[in-house]
Image (tube, rainbow, N blue to C red; front, side):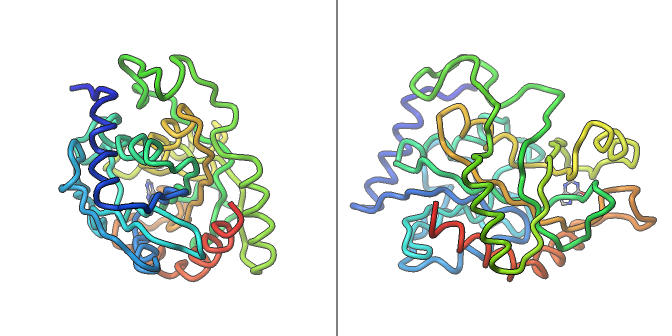
Length: 274
Ligand code: HPA
């Protein structure tokens, strides 16, 4: 099934009705263990994904499946408390549907966040990483199928998926806050299995610093429709094979929670100046 331009418009119109005069400027997508930031929004208006036409809902553990519209540090934001993943059985088109709807609603900036495995052996669990670029080598991307020219061109530029000004802003703010902010490349794996140690070694050779199962679909769609994106990763575990221990989803959530203070502090400071 393919979405038509009219489907995005219909979802956007429903949200406009619910939100009155409120229009979000920044879309924030919260990854595993990071949904707590949705509870820090002032004057919140909640809209469940299941109540929006054409939306799919998130099934991943800890993903609430709703928007929180409201204010963060004085800025109008739309927070996705729970995102969609392809491993839930959704197509990339379904996973990224909300991004285009929010673009139509007026958000031309995006903060995309995730929990990821750390491939770079010089870094530590619990540290944050600014995504400076990504790798998605195999399989089809979210722009497969008929292009919708209202959003962008058939062959879109991907040289600055993650906005350079935002990268500098994040580094400046991390420095002010005394937070370690690594700078690296995120490599997309479809999951839901964690990577094998051999895949992690391959990712390292290819230039990846972190591996994860999200973000790249949304960032690609945002680049296509001209949104400016800031990407922040919480390195919740050393990627498979780096240590002798086995990986679990539980470990990911615990580590994300531990990093919550620095994560929230950095996001807040960035939002103020985006
Ligand atoms: N791999 C993929 N996704 C992840 C990981 C990982 O090691 N940790 C958190 N999300």
